[in-house]
Length: 93
Image (cartoon, rainbow, N blue to C red):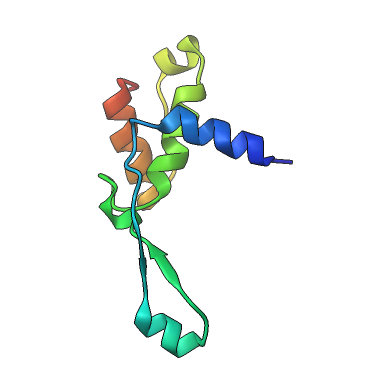
């Protein structure tokens, strides 16, 4: 089970590698849904989605041997983009 402490540790680990993206109120969605809605602007990440966060955390958690072996992402979407971009930034093949 993932704990709050696990999430906090991952957030600390990826600091400096991904943007701390802002949140903004969404009046349109709030009116439509009848509740206050806030949007997190993950599209501002260099990869265009939140997937860079998980990719970075995993890449940083790899051992030196695992990093040297390289990584493969079985995705052509946001996950694949996140892994490819962040692997490049971190020097992982």
